[in-house]
Length: 353
Image (cartoon, one colour):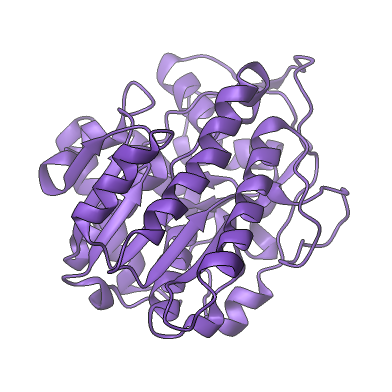
């Protein structure tokens, strides 16, 4: 069970805190009473959930680039964190095709830099590197990938995250193998949805933009299957993992955090659920754009997280869509800030994990 009370008064360092996942994580930890230091570039989108919810007012927010090893190490040493969550990344598959060097610099060397900073930190006991379900060599098979499957992402983004996993594995074995060393794990989750995601080339943000603009929703790959889940689902897993290994280094390793079978749906089905939740005034059509390669079928086996950590999913895909639409229809920044805090409270008050 994810006990948010565990994080009360804990010092938590988050890379990538200005992004979509990072902002949600900050708000969860603020409700838990944690002391948060964030290190990231300026928010990556306009609008930005980080700015809308005035997150910087309640944490120590440092503007910095994880490619800057010296600045990152200084920030970690000064923060003296108990726990580190590494989320900073270039996260868009399509952008990785046009900017492969930047993608590898950020996702691979950024991981090296935060692990080097961890080597200089005498206070940290738990470290979680957030990667992706796309780290696996995708064979398009109908069952879920387990943590011991081959790592070999296809596109520059996915491949760079596979490299990030390998870097973490090497550092854990080379520099943090002593029982008194920090526990180090990687967390792999699928396509997340939720209020405040404004990234390009993601299906639900694209649906919301179309609905707000009175335009048709355009589907590129309506038959592709992804493990969609609400952002609170995977974040509850990350928090649980960091908590469990804080006092028990033996459980460190790689963990999948994905939805149950019923929530692994096609992109077309996801868009249909969105249209139902949004109500009248939205429609969709299929239009291939001859874009770069993307996987058609991808699913995770989360047996390890459920068995070792006692992690469970809480919101199915229908609920996840409804909560995302609820946020998207909030009229002002204040209403959106209230909405995100209410959803966090509702989720963790009723959490089965």
